[in-house]
Image: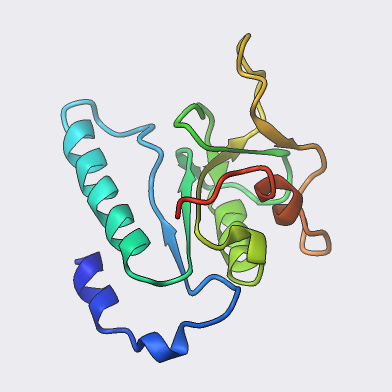
Length: 150
């Protein structure tokens, strides 16, 4: 379905340094074990279609979504399927809006969740030490250490 939608976009409108398309995917946490492999396979197909589309993209993989106010807790940005905490819907929405206008977010995929204590040997997590809010740009420093996918 994603691939069909991407095929109808006018490529002439997709130039520039900013993200053209933000995909909220999933981290795999909280998925019923009997359906997990099926869901993750579909997720990978959709993400790969977006990467090959020629669009400037950002793929956000939040932990399990929580109905609570955003901007209240520090966030972890990571690549590597190692997150284990949830995140508020409001914080995910804020990340998506910021990603549309942040050049460091272009062509990156990342997992995001609330802060937690990392296990030994997991020092590569990028912790944003301050709370996110509308006035600060927490996304640029968090994503600048992550690798592009293309």
